[in-house]
Image (tube, rainbow, N blue to C red):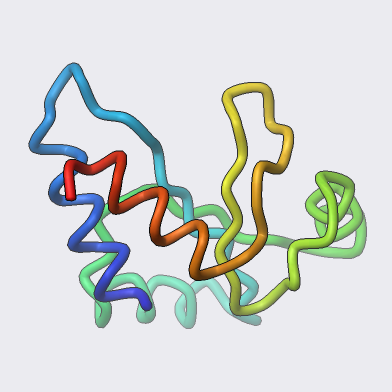
Amino acid sequence: MTKQLVSLNDKNLALGDNAKFQLILVGYDQSKEGNEGYLTSKGINFPAVKVEGRDSVKSLLSIGETGFIPNIVLLDASGKMVSNDRAEVLEKLTELAGG
């Protein structure tokens, strides 16, 4: 799935000022090095944040049932969850990126 997200993000970024979405990886690796290693090894080309501690997890889960790790969720501009269904989210991102 990561490779597909990187590819979709490339297409989205190619739209320039007309980009349709922003991907953000929410990592839960135990160490900074583990998180950075994953980003580098997978060629992640979008921002990443690291979830730290129970308060961060509680805040993340406050948007709704994410299915948690690993999963992909779609939020609208206000932060409200649109979908947590992986296939549906990938389909929508593909559509937004222009196919």
